[in-house]
Image (spheres, rainbow, N blue to C red):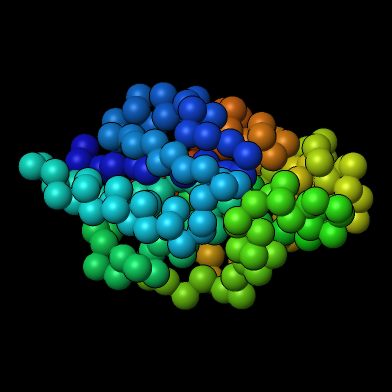
Amino acid sequence: MGEHVILVHGLWMRAFTLAALHRRLEREGYTVHFFDYASVLSEHDRSVEKLVELVHSIEAAPKPPQKIHFVCHSLGGLMTLRALRRLPDLEPGCVVCLGSPLRGSAVARSIAQLPGGSFFIGKNLDVLLEGFERWNGKRPVGAIAGRLPFGLGLVMGGLPLPHDGTVSVQETQLPGLTDHIVVPATHTGLLFSDEAAAQTVSFLRNKRFHHAAAA
């Protein structure tokens, strides 16, 4: 196919947590790469730099890719959009963000206000608090949000419905997105949801999610 996908995990996770998506995308014919980083301990700029380096290594392969896509969970979406600012001449491709608080995270804000909370979140706190105002890049970006409200957000409180237990649907709705869809999944469950995986493939192929026709 000549199309590559880079998987970028979220906060408090490592690359292996995206193994189910890795298998699904390989079955669809994509060449899939894990991007692993220490989401709490690593400086954000350094992690973004490492992601850019991975992209350059894929570009420099003996058989250059036709497209390079990104599929990201949670914090990974914020990191990827920042990395793309440093890659203006990258090959065509799409970005799918799964449960990414693209407009900033209310849960991260609540945790940061607790004693030791900033240390618990680590060196990506500012990124999670700031988010983006809009996406102005040329690359198509689609966001998949979950709506099963079970997770850290219930403990912290104050997260408006609908949400996936950690990130509200509203936080995933960034101006400038190409498409947006909500599926029945929790924040972590987005990584294992058959519907989220199918919608991811739909966006990578068509730059659109599959929206059910109105009754």
